[in-house]
Image (tube, one colour):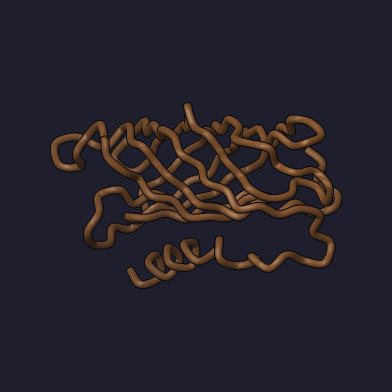
Length: 169
């Protein structure tokens, strides 16, 4: 049982790695993301997730000279598996999938589609090639984890957006 807990803690710390931009970084921003997450359990231990509608709002530079000018749309989908249960919360998921989001810049609106990994155990952490952050699932919920699983909830996230040379989405 200690091995799954260590894995869960390691995945939760993953977004904290790499916050210092590398020499080849060509852009960086701080972002907030909020919206609705839908969970579709296929069994007691796995299911499918979607995010939509959601909004990403970043402050900073996308590429070295492109200023981010406002909020954009954010969506995603993928699968999840139940992680080992801890204490205090009912949702313990580890998941993967893809996210699709729009960053409006002073040059053009930039659409980014990239792989997404997350871990959720009360609070959560996620990573993509460009985003690293944390998130929380907040009320209102559909489901209560006692008589039926949570299938819909609001989420809020904080992230760092790092763009590197060669990542032109």
